[in-house]
Image (tube, rainbow, N blue to C red):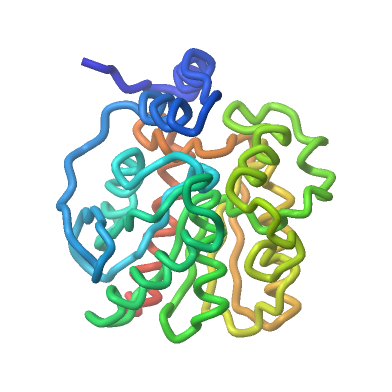
Length: 278
């Protein structure tokens, strides 16, 4: 049976042994292998959208990462379990992936899932990496769907001009070349200045209360900082927590990192407080 890593050093070794490269299908298999053994989750439907659900309590609709090319609700179940441990229900919708389905197919799926989830009461929307991008775009375009926004290391600037992408060293999980390659697969010829594509450059004034988590050793640090700055300027109530030294998507292994668990704990607590006040 696949043994999950127990330290971040173990995680780094695992990442090195499971390169996520090649065709989209090869990347999907490699990423699932990299994420490793995951807990079981309840299978539900949100309208026409399949989803997994873990936990009980106020709802966080959580979109998985993977550059819109790979990843799945199943590969993020351990992350969802750590979020749910804060006393919330975490729902992970399945959205269409590129390049078979071009942008904005995944955003359309996210909106449909949120619309269905919202029928049962107020929700917080969130996600990690590309999933964070989805959550922001959804909440910006349809503010009535989200009572709060909780994101972890979101892509927010798809122009490729952020200096942090090349200046930061030590991101075990991501690099500028790979991130740009995935963006090309997912976004194709979409205008990189489109507010849905690069929300750090959008009018963010309609966003609900927002909490952002990011690591200090990841190439998307600049994306998070630019987004927080723009949201603040636009009058959004936004909080930021930066964890020094943590690399991209470390929270896939919350059982191997106190810091990654703490990131998810703060996002879960934000969800609970936003929806219940306690």
